[in-house]
Every structure is written in C-alpha cells, then in structure tokens.
Image (cartoon, rainbow, N blue to C red; front, side):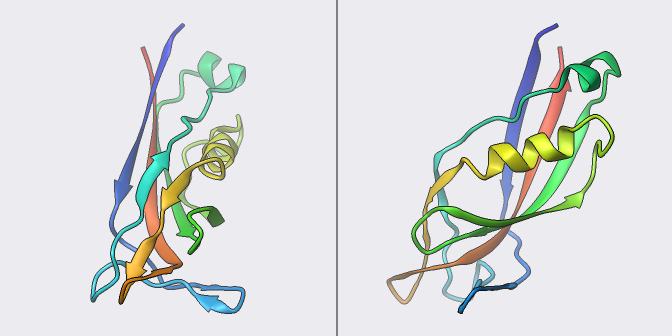
Length: 119
C-alpha cells in the first residue's frame, strides 16, 4: 500500500522559552521561518495495517540558526502505533531559513500539521 504524506505550515506560535533565548511568535515584526529541507514522516507497518489516517499537530521552535529545537505533539493522531513519534522524528530533520526580527535571526515558535494519508 502506498502512502501519501504532506505537511502544512501554520503561522501560529506560543512563545516558549528555549535555553537562554525566548522563542517569539510570528507577527509584530517577527517573520515566519521558511522551509529549506522538508522530511516527510514514515508510516509504521502497524499504523498501515490499522489504516490510521489524520493529522499530527506539532508545536515547533525553529532556532535562530534554522535548525529545529523543541518539538511537542499538540494534537495526537496515534500514540499506540507510532505515528506521533514518526512525525516528531521527521520534524527534527527539517531545516529552515530562520525567522527575523529587526533584521536579525531569532528563534520562532510555530505550529506544524503533518498529514498521514493512505492511498
């Protein structure tokens, strides 16, 4: 069975602290990070057999260097067969052109939705 996976960037953040640097929400002079490298999550065999489809919501901090910092599941799809973990694993491999504030790269807190769809 072939799977089709897609990820959608949503411009909403929560402003969580990351180390010494505060992650900012997009807006009010803070630009959204831009995706450079996107890695789609993989279906686990168990989730494919169970025919699980839907969205995993992630709260993600994109660091000032464009790497992914903290990743937290905010909308669980499948804690049993591993799709939540697969979404987090894939997210940590993404890279970004960082968000900017006053022309300087800053950590930005965004929401990402990863869609799992069987076809």
